[in-house]
Length: 481
Image 1: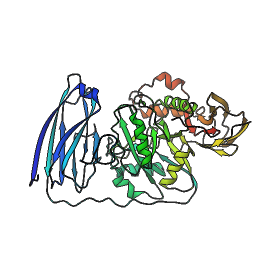
Image 2: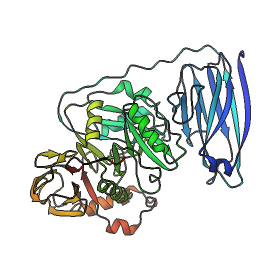
Image 3: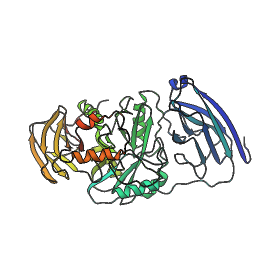
Image 4: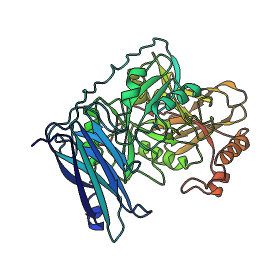
C-alpha cells in the first residue's frame, strides 16, 4: 500500500467508564502506508473536570508492557495534537523513520465520565520528501575537582506539561547556580535532544524521565533508553524496576504524599524523593513514609527535587522555584556518572535551596549512606553551615535521639550516642529562621490556596525542616525482596 501527496483519515472512538475500569490505556490502531514521511494527529472531545483524555503514539515495533521499543511520543493531557516526521516532531515526540504497518494512537483514560465520551481523531499523512533526523552527539563531561555539588533532580519543560522550552530551563538553572540538573519530563525522553549535547563543566545534565501513572510517579535517572510507563497492575512496578536496572538506570519514587502518593506495590528502589517543592507542601508525610521503609530494612537513598514546571519566560527566584529543594552530593568529579553513583550510595543531603544550609554527618568516620558495625557508642559529627539559631536533630528508627542548638553559621557538632536503632540521620529544623521562612512561603503563594491536604494548622505546628541528611546504617543493612 502506498499513496501520493496527502492522505487524511477520521475516526470516532467511544470511550466508556467500563473501558477506564478495564485499564488506563485504550489503543487505537492506525494503518500507516509505505512512503509516509509525516503523521499529524489531532484529538477533539468534550473536555471537562470529569473528562480528561491523554494522548500518545507507538509505532509497529511496540509490544505490550514493558516494551523495549516503539515509543514515538506522549502528550499526556498537555496537548490535543502532534506531528511526527522523519526530520522533526512535536516536543515530547520522536522524529525518525516511519515504518509502514500498524501504528497505535494511545488514549490515556485519565478521567472518563459515567456516560462515556466521544473522541474524534483526525489523522493526516504526507509523503513529501524530507531528510532523516539524527541526534547531536552527547557531550562527555568530566571535571576532576572533588567537592560538594548542588543540583535539582526533578523538573519539566514543554516536552511534557510545562510551558517553557529547554533553553529557558537551561538559563534558569544557570541563574540558580545549580551544577547538575535532571530534566524528568513525563513519560518521554525527547528533551534529551536539547540537553544531551549541552552538558558542560558549569552544568551537567542527568538523563531523566518521570514515569507517570494515576497510581503514582517515579523518576528514572541515567537509563540509556526510554522506559515504558504503561503499568496496569500493582505488580507491574516490579517489572518497571527490572527494566530500569537493565537499562543502567536508578529508580526513585516521587512525592509520596497527597495528592499523588505511591499506590503501586513497592519495587526494588535506589532512592526516594523525600522532599518535593517547599517543605510546607506536605513533605512531612513523605519523610514519615521514608522512615517507615528504613525501619522495615530498606536502604533507600534520600533525595529531593523541585518538580519545577518551567514557565514560558524566566521567573524570579523564590521558595517555590527551581532548585527548591536542592540535592547536595559529595563528588570526586563533576560528571553524570559521578552524580549517579553518589545518588545511589546516599553520599549527600537535601537542603531548602541552592543557598540553603549545609549538613553532612559521619559516625566514627563512616559517611552518609555507609554502614557502621553498630556495637558500642558512636562518635558522631555534623558539619553545618548557614543555620545559626536553628536546631540540629538526630533521628533513628525509634525517633529523636538527641537535639542541639546551632550556635553559629560555621559549626561542627560532636557528640557521643548509644548505638542507634537501625540507622541514624540528622535534620536542621528552623527556629530563629522560622518566621522569615514561613512568611516567604505564604507570600510566594500570592493568594492561592494552600497545597493539597495542607492546612493552616499544619503550617503553624509542623517542624519546618531546612535540611535532611542521608542515614548512616547500622551494620550492613538488608533490602526486602
